[in-house]
Amino acid sequence: MQSVGYRKMEEREVPYIKELYEASFPKSEKKPFEAMVEGNERMYAVVEEDRACGLLFTLEDANHILIDYFAVDPQARKRQIGSRVLKQFFAAHDKPIVLEIEDPWSTEAPAERALRQRRKAFYLRNGMREQAYNVDLFGVRMEMLATVETFSFEAYLSLLKTCLFDGVERYVALAEKTTRES
Image (cartoon, rainbow, N blue to C red):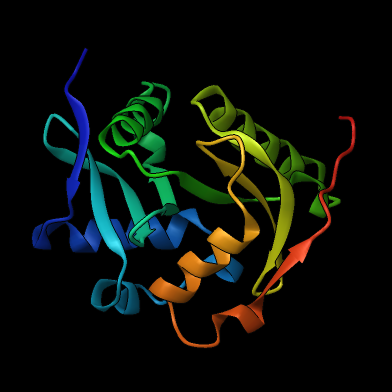
């Protein structure tokens, strides 16, 4: 099995990581790449045999970590790179870790819903737990997952306030949990 891990993004990898970021996330969820580079975002390259094949961007405060963006290059998928990196990342941090995923039930498109459900199943298989709430984040309905049984909305909002910008709370709202049988 090839060596897989993550490390701080190197300058030479910025063009590739930026291209992967732009291709991997919908416009409604993206922040300007340059603002993340210059801001509080911790930007890691996912690597296989020391070659970048993905990205892992986080926001961190003293007590919590938000996985802001995580993607593996489509050409590197099906080799369990994502699972292996998440396990390494979780093991390296003793703080609770939270992430947002698009709510599978906030779309009527069957193919998009199936993709979102697969994404959720991936994170659940890798140790994340569903939280009792969703959020509306900049107008996008997101389901919350965390490495702990309960990651409070208040802790999540505090993390965003610490790491992003003054007034971010105006763009984040507690939302009803959506549950439907597939």
